[in-house]
Length: 249
Image (cartoon, rainbow, N blue to C red; front, top):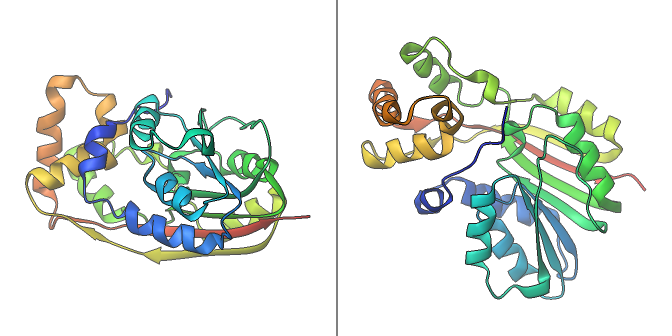
């Protein structure tokens, strides 16, 4: 499947719970201010911007597969200069960086990637020994209620687009990739939206992007509206997979 190209401008206008998730991820990195940090699946630069503020003597390496997202990131951070390095890369493939990083983070990206073993090896190889990796993504049970509603609208609910891993398999994959001090948890964190334009924009941009790509453009708006109308309440039943691990020395 080709990489999903995001509507970055609309993405930045939405009331994203991702902002809250990013605060937690950055706090768990335990930065001192001089590190080089890998932002894996950086999107429009929301977390990169905050990381740069936390790193007056450090840098951010921002990696994403979407050209639109990276363009929006550069527009957001025009004065970052040498402290920001952007890399467009398909994260389904092994990631090669020019130099190692001190820490790595990822917010709401892993569930879009089918092979977590490859991702974890990429992060391990990017980190210096002793470097910390903190991430959160959709985990086992994520959006199960929404998928049930979607299944009432279409025969194919599109679950194949996502990879919602559970706790034990994630621990095993991190251990096999060369991490220690592994902590993994699943945390319910539903997001409530306003019915109407806000909910439909959120669904179209954040949740149903991969589904819409497979539809003729003239059908997409009606499909999103139909799904939104079928939802019993304007709630996305997120369950977050939270990860913290350290590259073995």
